[in-house]
Length: 84
Image (cartoon, rainbow, N blue to C red):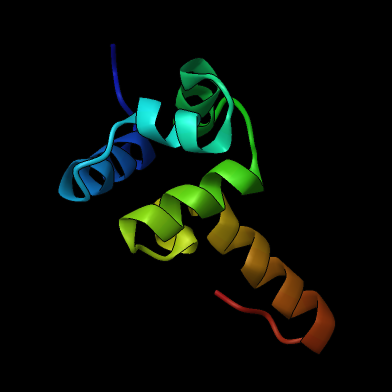
């Protein structure tokens, strides 16, 4: 199984926090497979993403790269200033 950079970063954050994907799934009353799909980027769930960020202590934008880009685009549209 080949991991992408986002998956590696999230799995390291979970390890540092002494957590497993199953712990996150249990706390959110969802399946481990769903949490795995969110981490792999196959599904998007702000509930799962925010919970992982909260439990690991990392900002959600640092763990889930697409959240950085979305935030930057929203800022550039509202201010009219291009954000790189």
